[in-house]
Length: 389
Image 1: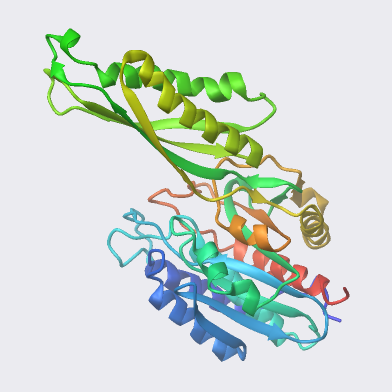
Image 2 (image 1 turned 60 degrees about the vertical axis):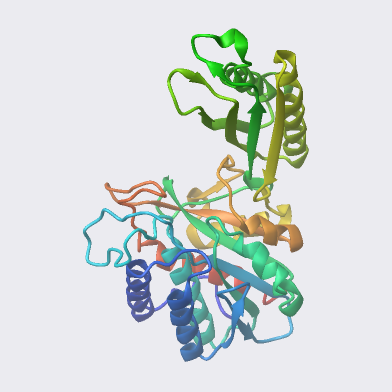
């Protein structure tokens, strides 16, 4: 039986670093990953895998089916961000206004190299679906793939994903048995007052003043109505009103975001925002409406699958390289949709290995290629562990 401790070959890692730099130089936005998915499919077919294209748009699933055990899924995201890259390295983006600032080029490369590594290992007798997902950043590509029959066409007993994580030491694994990343919702509140000359405010009903009162009131939801032991963030990020310095406008608009690690808290905040938006303006003789949009859900790990990641990482990297029960992030991730359908786990792979390490979504960010062999060993280790189940 294939061993957890098998290292990917030097030639494979060399090739993989080349793949990664090619992907980095040719980034594509969500649902536009045509070159990216084409290159991925070409590689997978050259390995000898069954390849299924155009799932959820530009998504790809490749299958390695050996043995009679459980089927697992390993997932990577493919899309880039609408940002201008400022780095000057040789593989910088050739597409103006688009760059891989979140490391999806690295995630894709890790999964590609894992597929090659497992296919070439003739002792491997497992069953794996390799999932290359579009549009993680804003397009809910995971949900689109599910709606397009991902789990119906490719049933899985468990699904796993990873993300490179600046701020965590290179090669460290962080995972917990519950919420790894927050839900992400947005809201837009429109306050309807009545305009007037700025020198005669008594003749109108100033929606700007009402908006400022409402912004303060909204901040009491988290600070005074939710337990300090429950993590939540409510941020007002936009206030729009008026076009002239001497005119009180008719309307004011407030926009913001809500992040939570618990579904009950998420629903509570939604209800409170709606109530405040509709009732507080009436105290001033105005009216308020709210449009609340639910975004990505909580990325909720299955406890057994998270423990499984911990065990594999302990075996491969050593206990000192595993952060168990790590603190969740208030950022969001659409892998959450897959975890709502199938048990699984999402973990972070520490990326801080060089002095110029940049945070995600930074114009000078570049994926740390030293993570490729580590990620391959972890993904392959997870796949190999299911051989004996």
